[in-house]
Image 1 (spheres, rainbow over the protein chains, first blue to last red):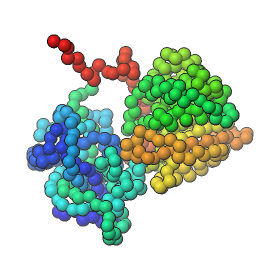
Image 2 (image 1 turned 45 degrees about the vertical axis):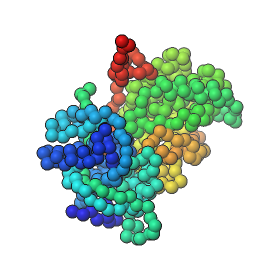
Image 3 (image 1 turned 90 degrees about the vertical axis):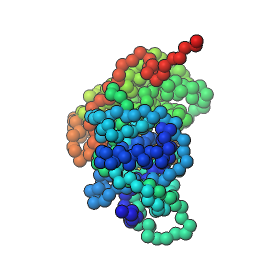
Image 4 (image 1 turned 30 degrees about the vertical axis):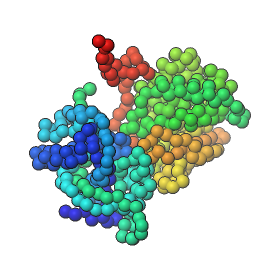
Length: 193
Length: 277
């Protein structure tokens, strides 16, 4: 199903590339296989701009309550990521109760992971200037100004201006999408404490 | 308040702040522990020391360790002024431990820490002259989390003292303006007034909003103000529903410290040694 950008739509934008010394193409193949085997995959990530508990979970929950599917919209980029490809053994929704990660799923070199399915290549332009940060300390900030410097991912909401053409306007090209599914985002760790 | 800002030896002051920063536990973002940048800590500590000169000062939470900076700068005579006594109330045992260890090591006799969760009734004493708090800023709760910390601060002074509340302040964003308005209304409703507001002063190690700054809201009790009643626990679900962000009510009473012998040093589980042949 093609993604249609409309006012009020929530999406999680993320720049993606090599992660934990593994190319994006290899990651896509591996995650697609995980979804076939387990019904979902865990897409690893780091940083604290999309913390599972304070950002992604409440964001996804609120938009799902409005009847929306939350899409992960990914912009491929050239990157080096030298984190060790250490497999996470456990995941937790709340950072308190931990469960083993199913054997079919491998999260490598990450502290957090998004629960996804429907991973596919889909090409479209996302006008970041017509989005705003949906929650957190930068809530209300323009998406184009927010995604700068070291900030490479965000929980965004499409604004009313999406239907108003402005030329020229800054856009990013999305090439890879997935649906975010419950429990939306989790903590992961490689060994029990 | 001591007089106007005096000249200080900036190099010595920054090096003292560096000692304090080295001693702090690493922040837990889940609990909105977001640390102020070092340059702003120097200026903020000088201001707090001057504002609370000769007074008994309660810190309602203090991940930044401004309390330690103020006590240390005064004890080392980098500042000629400072509070007579400082007590830090924090629910993170790592922070309380770091304050206590630093106070012991540097012989800061007027500084101590007490493990306390601000949802519990304030344990006292209630004879503080002033309070300081830099709480969770309440982006998702219209300042309700700020009100909880400010309430405990006002209780620490028996609603008769002064306070410095450090909260977000931004020209462009809407939510800090709502929080500032709500907090000021709350404080006025408790018999205080806003004595001074110092806008957009401090920056933080905050990767999702690196340019977001905070202000100092300095408040003071009206003459003859009275406490509305004894301090009680806060359990109102509506008030706490978004305490640490949207849909994130408090679930943890205390953050407990895993005791170790190498505080402030590299942990031995961070590395291994490969010996020379």
